[in-house]
Length: 374
Image (tube, rainbow, N blue to C red; front, side, top):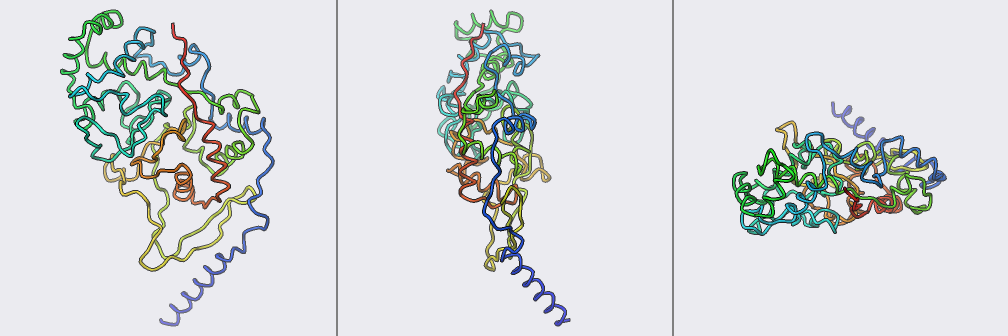
């Protein structure tokens, strides 16, 4: 029996050493193919990435909720409510407190701070409100199907704005300006909790952003750098676009995170070289240590089977929305890319590859379009 175990151990060590030497990695470095702009553009479009429309007429066709028709007056009312702290218990917190439109649509904090300085007890990071109307899921657990439903959550959460629907209606009715606007926008329904959140959502549906990436997709070869083009190619080639897709570049699904955990004695290593994925071997880890999943918050929003299940973040403006991930535990975008490659794709990226992907992500930066809405 001991002989059999010894043979197995020796075979295992030889196998590990063989792969660790990297005998199956071809010589020649990272070796990326030549990037042709038109080919890259068509590949991006065919894989679900799309530019945000320039005109409100086209954008409206995409973002409008048939149950909440968009009008200029409703959007104006929603804008006023979005910035108004009277929707919070102590009149200190508004929607804009955690979703700052001028700075990526979030608050750049690890976790949201609500009334009385309370941090989110689940230590959840505020997602961006910009382009949220393009997402099929809202909140980190994806529980809300649209921004109309989502707007109800923070207002009622005791650690965010701490209001009841009845108190919201009472405060809004007490304002003569709001009474006049609601009479015009909702002549039949009047001031209700539903109409308040519908108005806020109407405003949020206008918060689409455009940037260099949109211009590239529309045909401007010079809109993004060659480095960013290489990053876009990698983004699609290694599998990022599998989850980060659509016009919003994310927000379309719930996915398990991480897909891979490295907590054994041997840690597998794979690289992306010469435009192909290569398994390089195993890396020995010290006994008692592991390359652990870096986040203590494992979710569990959907019960026991929902652990590690999160909504895929929107990547538009991601370089402006640090810190990263559901609990805001990663400060640098480069580290976020490195972690995603390792734990989702099973890849160890070079610093050059990470830099190229970050260069692409920067092309997703953009301010709200500022549509002319009539």
